[in-house]
Length: 411
Image (cartoon, rainbow, N blue to C red):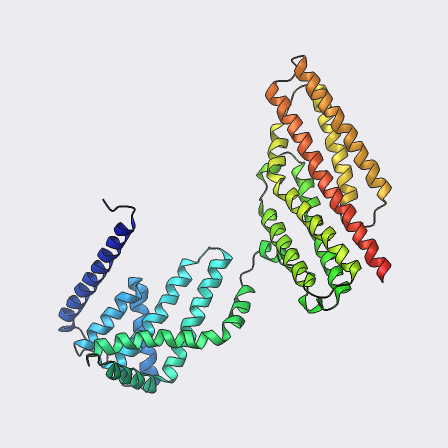
């Protein structure tokens, strides 16, 4: 009756803990019986080799059983039964923690870059903690015993080892906390995908925020980069089969747009000249327009693939609008940011003319039965969406040109 309710979840948690401790009890009993006929090898070599061997024992146990908890239970049981001295069992506990790194490494084989970075962080955490714990092993174990005595806990090897395991992990947190920022930056530069590299701003340098004109120039260059990507996506979306393209570019552009917004907000918080303040809305609005264009690309590609009609007049009008769109995109490409505005205006007017012809042919073809209502709807929707996306891209280009002119006049 409690299924799906809070009471049900609490009950499942209690049952889970019960089964966990039942399993630990079974393991402990089995190991105790096994200990009568099985002993771990005694190391007579120098101390460092003893440490390495028993660390290896803990790692192997965790790797084979894919559970550090099970390995810890074995170490606790062995110490409790006198099969292992307390200090040796503590070394096995360190090895069991290190053994979890093998599971992390194996689990991220072929995984995402984020998962690989998390796994590497896990490995670094355990390696650093284990190295420090070994270096200060004797005082660390003495500290654990002192804490156990202070807390009034039972003076048994199992209790001491359980407390040792807890303090071992607390030690790891204490060691990593001061360097967490550096570790995060180190990990963020590892296993980077092409998408992650593309989504990282190239020109937004927070060190120049105190220099408004230079900061605005950096913003303008980043927005121009977003425009490059948008025009490239539009060109690809005009090709048949564009709907099957990988849509990673949408995430890249959105990430860059967010970075532009954050950078603009930081810049706005400083004392800015009036001319700089007037440029920021154009930059933000252009970024927003370009982001919307890229978000609409899957729909444009889908309509392009589905708008396949047999009527010659409609087909010709569709191809003509496609050609005029490609011509306009050539002028909007960032290879020549100062392309003559008259050429862009002429290309835009040609697109408007071809769009009107497409609408006329689609409606006329449907009226005389050469085109189905569904095909007419696809053609009209494709033409209207293509016109809207090109218009937004063109408007962003015009706004960016205005910002560029202001920056030049101010220098």
